[in-house]
Image 1 (cartoon, rainbow over the protein chains, first blue to last red):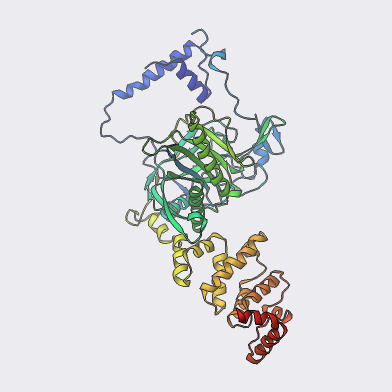
Image 2: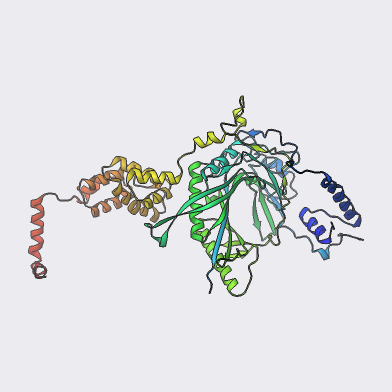
Length: 108
Length: 463
């Protein structure tokens, strides 16, 4: 399986990670190889387990109001605020296009 | 020109009617000071964990049962990832792999050619119902190039109801959603008021030629009333047909409905296909539901949701209520639809029937043709009616006893509407609207008319 430039670009956009350079990409490839070893296990007829919690009981909470009303505490973390609203940029700031990104695959 | 077959599917998000949120104990309330109904979990502060609200599970089970779904005794929670300012965690907890309910159906009715007397029943399949979190609210401030974020709504429980593309036009879509709204309100699982954002509808629209595969579909968002839903769907169908007939192609995109212009426009920020990177929610075990058979002994009832227990307590659904009204009162099916369509109207009708000797079949005419049209003209709800069921029953009794004519009764109603506190009898006396029952008196009046208008009488007799 080839980790292509398109795949890397796609991952960077989705997860906002920065692979930065060839070394970073190499580390990614090694991580994928390591995980691929799972394919060597024969899982035919075995139900997939998707959580170590699958045998636990899911606790159900009563429908009571027990939290909230801590506006000032929450806003302490905000770099900018306007009258008790959090302030964010006008929309998702699009990442620069593939060709424009400097850090991308520097020296690869 | 070959005919086009429009195909319409719907994704409906209904806010669950509960005191607190789906995974946290902050309050659910419309219109509160910004960020006052937000817990640390809702703000996605590190170290917080989701704790499932039992009431939300019950609401979803109720709704699933009412829509004839199979309830999955084991359902799972997943994370759906995307970046937006009103989604502080960067993901929404939803049920993508195994939702709580699947494979149901909803029956709804339509009038053919706008004639109430010709109603046809249609069915739409319900693909699934899933529990998921609502996001916060973004207020766009274009002048200062910023977005203000209020997380009061973040984490409120939603039921997403997915309707298969069994509908073919705006009217069907609106009728199906209306019936769903009535069902949710009857169950109490959601108040489903579209104007308050408690019921949001996204439409998936495509067109194709008969016998050919389905066309590319677009998703239409930002629809906040039933009227706009019908308009948006019909506009989009037309737009796609015109585009294709002009040799163009339909893009698989998300479009917003612009209510002022009455058209759909492409939405920015939704360019390109989204990859949500679904993964199991690692902090929540599977949700296990029980029925009477599978219920373990010595169980803590607070920790268990019993599907059969909920089923036994389901109220009469709108379709059942309508059938009962038709059977009990001898009214027509379309009357029962009109009664249920207006909040409080059925109760009003039943109260009047109880207090008057007039047959329900006649009372219904007064309710639907007189009371309801007055209410609509003055934009009032049944609760706000200046004429109570008691007063109307009083009036109808006078009419039934032939003490006044039908025309006079309408005049009395108009007077009662003024809400001056007079009884029907008082108005009748005041305006001298009593019917003359005395035979001799009637003969005298007729004779006087004939005498006064001799010429006209001769003309009439001669034919």
